[in-house]
Image (tube, rainbow, N blue to C red; front, side, top):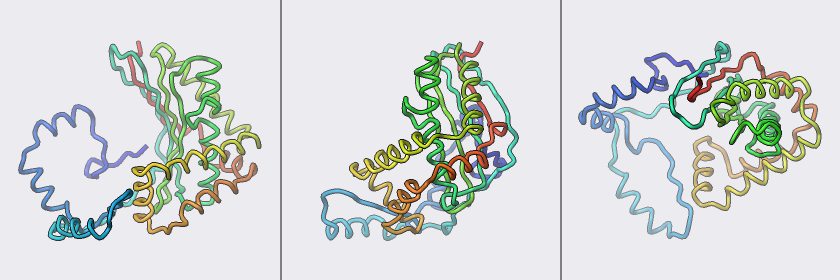
Amino acid sequence: MYPYSQSDARFRTSVEDDAERYTNLKLTDVVELYQQFLGNHAGELVLVGDFDPDTVRPLLDNIFSDWSVKEPYQRIRAQTFANTKAVRQQIITPDKKNAVYFSGHTLPIGFRHEDYAALKMASQVFGAGSLSSRLGERLREKEGLSYGVRASYSAFNEEENSRFTIMAIANPTNTPKVVQLVDEELNRLVKEGVTAKELAAAQQSYVQGFSLQFNDDGRLAGLIADMILQGDSVLFYDDLFNRVKGVTLEQINAAIKKHLIPKKLIVVTAGDLK
């Protein structure tokens, strides 16, 4: 989905290439990277819990104040590959008990786009990890083909770039059927849309599930760090929830038809696929 060139830091190398790179890595390479790029010039530190800020701040200043760096920070902007060619690929991994199905395609819209919340709810209805989702009901409950299946939709905050993905785990012998049924369900989603009942359940489930993260200190720290990095205020999540709650049936079905394109799906299956 993201075919960056080999000169790009985000280029995905093969397992064989990774093994060769790690084998040839020298200590001087690590030291050079550290001295050139790692420092206190950019970043966010969020602490959540029972602590005294007046005690912690001097300690942090002592640790990070002289951590200089040669290269100034510059964010690498995400690139949108809207016209990536659809492919279907098998990766043979002998003697593996389970097989993995992964598919998806990119969309040239970002978090701020008016259709973001609608697409988020579409992925919630389609396969948000629940047995009551479309994929959960079809692949697990009805057909008994998959040990786990889910769909997700995520978007960049600063660029018009997002992706819709589907993942499933199954017995290798069931993989062709999994591919077939995911195709069927995605085409049905685009053709028929979702119902008012499905949308209402998705909205409630998403807001309740997301809100639970505020009860976990580690996740709360991550959410606050993301908010700071994006330059948003404490009202960020209130705005997100309001956007989700405000999605109408007409909006979600229009967004599905406009942005989810089954023929663009990149499908990869891996396992002992004989």
